[in-house]
Structure formats: structure tokens, C-alpha cells
Amino acid sequence: MTDRRTLDRTDLEARVKQMYEEVALAPWTDFHFETGRGLAEHLGYPSTDLDAVPESAIESFAGVGYFLDLASVGSGDRVLDLGSGSGMDSFLAANACGPTGSVIGVDMTAAQLAKATRLAVEAGFGQVEFREGYIEDLPVEEGVADCVISNGVINLSPDKPAVFRAAAAALRPGGRLAIADIVSARHLPHGVTCDASLWAACIGGAAQRDDYLRAIRDAGFEISVVRENDYRFISDRARGATASYGVTSISLLATKQ
Image (tube, rainbow, N blue to C red):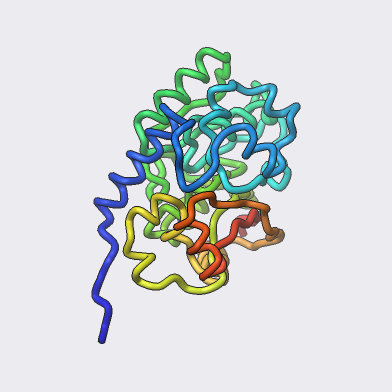
């Protein structure tokens, strides 16, 4: 018998916005995942780097891996952050690119955008701008970026190939894609992939690893680095899905051909 259940994308968007509004406004809430500085340091973010960005951005950090060493952001680089949240990775990239570079963060959650924008002004990050938008249809011109970054967000998209095509369009030739995200060893069943609450928790949208990497290559990238991250979910439901289907975190570097 065919399983005819489908993901309700409207419900998914509403759940994602609600959850990450809580991450922005009340990061101490119990989620399926960890948040904050302890998580960032566990994933490999250097303490000295974290000391140089707003503490309020770090407390709302909900990433799944460290990748900025792969991004190799340098002075004058133009960086685009997909799903920028409260801005921690954007601010770290801004410190790396300096005042002659620029960072554009894109997010669809109003509370995250408001918090990140406020923190940028208060901390004097004049080269950082946050824009409302969707990562499948980025509000930027083509070829505007030297490097696209993203942390734990692309798995939330129901159209990952569109995300990678949009990233490729935003990059100059030879530009870099440096991301961390959730993938699975095995294809997830309909009971998981059609559950918007599990998508919002960064589980239900995990693409099978080979399919995920293929989508990146199909968008015109050459992948040079893929590495595993020591990431952990904390709720029983999330840990159960992780154990059953091999849900893990990876960081990767790819170059636009």
C-alpha cells in the first residue's frame, strides 16, 4: 500500500519560525538540540574568536558544526550567510574579512533578524547587513559573494537542490561554499520526513548523505573536504531517530566551478 502522506510546507515554515523565534528570545528553553557557548566550544569554535563577538549572539547559537576554518575568510572577502540566525557566524566572518569586506546574513525569522541587526549596530559591525529572505531564493545579486556559509540550516529546506543552485548563483566563479549540516546514513521513512515537528528540530529534513553531496555537485560545485562533527541531539525522540537512521553532522568545503 502506498504511503500518500506529504510534508505540509506551510506548517513546516510556521514551526521553524516559531522554534527559532524562541531560540532568539529565550535560548535557555529546552529544545531537541543544544544552544549557546558550550555548544560552540564543543563543536570546535576557538574561545578567543567567540570572545570577540556579542555574547547575546552566542547564547542563541544553534549550529551543528564548525566550518569557518574551511571557509578561510580573508581580508576584503564578501561573505553570504544562509540562515544567519542571531548572527554569531556572521560576526565571526566579519572579524575575519575586516572593514574592507562585507557580510550579508539572510534569515526568514523576524525575531532572529531583529536581534542580529540590533547586535550589529551595538557592537559596531558596520560591514554586516541582515536581510529577510529564503535560502532557496536569496535576496542578493548574482556573483556577489566570495564565500557562502551556513550552519545547520539547509536541512530545514524542503528543496535543497534549489538552495545549492541559489548559493552557486550568488558566488563568483571559484567562490567557496563552507557549511555544516545534518545528513543521514539511510533514507528516512515517510513517518519522519512528513513530520514538520521533526523537520523543525533538524532531524526530519536530513537528506541521505550521498544524495546531499550529489545535489551540491549538480549545482556546479566541486567538493574538496567532508568531515564528521561531534554533534549530539538531546531529546529522547531526536536521539532515537539519530540511532535508527544514522543522522549525523558534517562540515564540508566546495568550490564553484
